[in-house]
Structures are given as structure tokens and as C-alpha cells.
Image 1: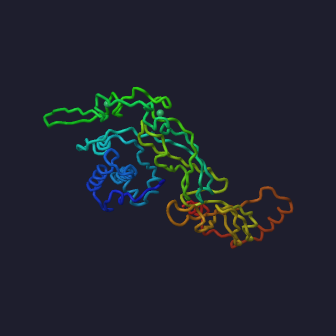
Image 2: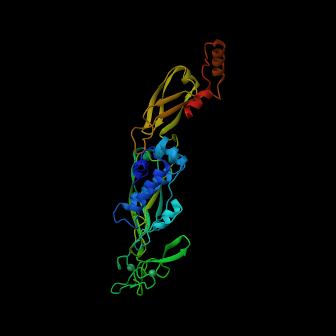
Image 3: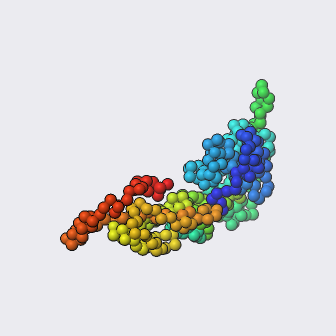
Length: 372
Ligand SMILES: [Zn+2]
Ligand SMILES: [Zn+2]
């Protein structure tokens, strides 16, 4: 599970000052080494995806600049999401990224990868602050028990495809003035499976998969942001006929809070003091992520004043420390008063001098600093 990954430079194995050409070379080398079509390593797919994401970011000046300055968080707030893709053959990947064909890397007969599954959950802001485990119901295709995902009726066997002789791919050679070009395509007859099923499994009608209702426990890390996705590798749909499973993506939504507003890692709230409380000084309760806390306000507290509770905001996702909690003071003015109150306020006004009020900083300036 990863919402923000490893350092992109580290993934590609290049220095922070690497040139475009070096980055391209590093990715090309990794792609040839890690692509699921050629690598047998169990974590090759995960590492390949990381490499693609890293290359996508570092190969473009704009996203590389964002990443250099603000890291993964900068990319997220900049609205950048790495391409979600299914693996094509190595050739597809290379033509997508480099506009050219792969260089003679022989692809194994490839079985389709299962589709990714998307789910969505909504949590409270306090839950996002502490992190939480949640059960998420998902409907995913899994390998059929009866045929163990082969799609073949038990007791029968599948025949090798005559067109591709079991490789799942057909090579076409074209001769041009520049030389011979070999293009490999998925076999149309067997759909790349390399075999033909004459007796499909009755449990799954030859698909090798059945639908399954499951409940998965998702661990939501402290500090997660609204709209982030958590990936559970291999928890998506099973691939056709024993192919690799897709991933499960859980979109996390954070419900709006009644009294708290989140801004990045900071939390923001307001407190209302009456005109007389603000003038005379008072104690007041303010809402924070950990419940109400009492704050003391000095005599002469002004509207727009900001109280910063350091380290009382949201935890930094996959990092250290917490943001701040900022409390903005509002001062309420009576709008319905008795005759006696009117007399008192009239007296008060008469007794006021230039010194009674101060105007060192405008309310607007304070508001701006509250929102930074
Ligand atoms: Zn079956
Ligand atoms: Zn075939």
C-alpha cells in the first residue's frame, strides 16, 4: 500500500542533477530489466510501475520542477496523477514512451492481467487525523475453484493454438529499404492465450474466473488527504485464464467538518467573543481535532486576531510532525438591546477617547495573514 512512493531519483538510480538523456537511459534500462513480460522477479511489476511513475514525472520539466521543490505532495496538490495503465507488451510501453519499437526482447506468451477495481469510502476529519482501519466491501473476479483458473473442464485438456503454436503471438516481417522489421502481434485466434478450449469449465463457462463478494480491511494512514487513493496490489480482478490479478484502488473522501476546515496540514476554526468579552478579556472553548480546549483571551482582543496552536493540526502524511491549528477571533456586536443597555452604551461612547480604540493593523491584513 502506498499513497506516496519512494524518491523518484532513487527509483531510477540517477542523481538529482541528471540530464534528460541520463533519465531516459536509466528508465530504458530499468524497463528492460523489470517489465513483467521479461522478469520473473515477484516484485518486478511493482518496481516497474514505480519506474514508469518516476520517469513520467522526471522526464517533463514542469512536473520535475514541482517534484524538486515540493516532493510528492507538490505533485498531488498540482493535480498530477501518474498514468494508470495496463501492461501492454514491452513494445507498447516503449512506443508509448519513446515513440519506437522495443529492441528484440522476446516476449513470453502473455496472459491478460485482470482489471483494476475501484472502491470509495468516506471518513471523518478526526479519523483522517489518527488514521483508521476500515472494512471495504468489494466485488472482484477470482480464479474459479473448479478449474483452478484454467477455464478448462476438469478431466479435459486445452489444445495448443495452431496459428501461433502456443506462443500467443504472431510475428510479421516486413522488408523495407532500411532493412527487415519484425512486428509481433497478439494472436487473433486464441486471443494471446496460446491455446483453444474445446470443453470449457462448467463452473465459470471457460472464463477461469467467478465473481466474489469480499470485504477487505484497508488501513488509512494518519494525515491522508481528501481524494487520495490507496492501492492494494493484486486485490483487483483476477486475470483471464490464470492471468495476474489487477489492483484495488480505494478512493478516500473526507467528510466536511462542522467546525473545522483543513488547509493542507493546518486546521482552521473560528471563535466568537461578544463585544464585552473581547473588551474585558475572557476564557472561551474552541474546537480542535482532539475536542474542545479552553483558550484565554486578553482584554482588548481584536476581531481578526489569530491564535496559533502549534502542532495541533493534521499529521503530515508519511512524514513527521503535525501542522498547526489556527483560531480566528470573531467579535459579535449586539443587535437587540434594552433601553438600559442603550443608556449604558451611550455613556460608554461619551467616555471614549482616542486612546480607547487602536488602529495599528487593519482587519483585512489580519484576515489575509489568517489565510496566508
Ligand atoms: Zn472454471
Ligand atoms: Zn494462437
